Image (cartoon, rainbow, N blue to C red; front, side, top):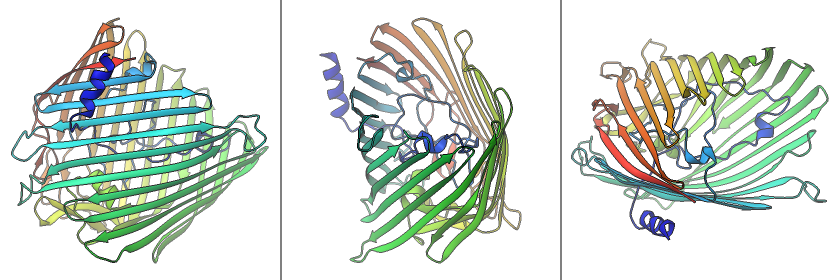
Length: 529
């Protein structure tokens, strides 16, 4: 009975959960980590997730200059050691909490599987109080996916995975750092997708996905629709092989008008794979992408070299483009307002990356690397036209350099540790820093199970000083957020949790005039069944 009462509570209030990057269709494992397909560690830049993973895996660093990277609005402590990772649930997990500034917050996860079907659902919500005038935030949503699997012995399409996904999200808040601080904005996102994936035959693997997304800025009647599709094919024949990847996005816009603007972006790679020796793989190919009259045609190449057991060396030359649209800008900065442009195509005419990776069994992993790029049409947020309402500007001839160290350590005796450190440098041709890109970014996450019934964790996030305008005349001081987490097992299925966020009570800013949440303590429960 208790689980039904708790679920009713989370459904009956306009909660809000962690903001995030919207779930996109992930490439199947056979495309990403196929025998002759090269995956290069990247400097990871974590973003909040609307669709939280049921098991947190170690992600190699993935920071790239096209990410508008400082989009971390104050969130409860990230829990890489979630109950789902430990496998101590049967079909559901309910997380409820209430705090000084966060009241309430909740997540409900549900999963069921019976061959050949698997179903997952997630209901979430969070409400942040007005810690200063008009500074509250409210978000809620629901999402789910259904996976169907055909038998590996079926006469028609054996080993095929069919995926159906749906997602609804709404949030509302006020532009409290603008000249009209009481102005309320409400956004709505609806997403659906279907995907097909087959990796049973080592000589021929493929995936095909389609996605439909709708963004509504309800306060302005602005609507953006995105129709997306992608296809992947990989074929291996002994020591040689080839792969083809294609992506297309059709952007449809309507803004208080009877007509609808349309833009078509597409990109593709075709590569030839060489694997003449067991420890060395090479991939050579070509890339092409286009939006309107802007296009890019370039050769691409990558390799991976096994130096010793657990030691890999990677290299990549991969010019490419990045399509930015209203939804992607709003995910990075909720105070963004589309005013002057409908989209931006960022062009990486040069992109080089080198990385080392060391692994020791399942206990320790570290990635160290660097990348360099020459970029045109780099977007940055700007509120010079209207205070606290961000449009974007662009810069050409930007030089980018990134170095990173990313490590994880897991031990039943010493606990777990995640460490990320980045040095990022984006400079324009006249030697100005691109706004809202901190040069230093450090994250530390440590957890330890003191007793069988008690687990403690801490997290530190540091962002160095960064500029807020392209002339580099105004800046924001460093961002420091220290958090603690404790979980106490009351019963076999019930835990009591406590989170302390921004313990130093530092006045943090991610965007000019928008103060982040101050010190907050959140107490709650986690119930599994």
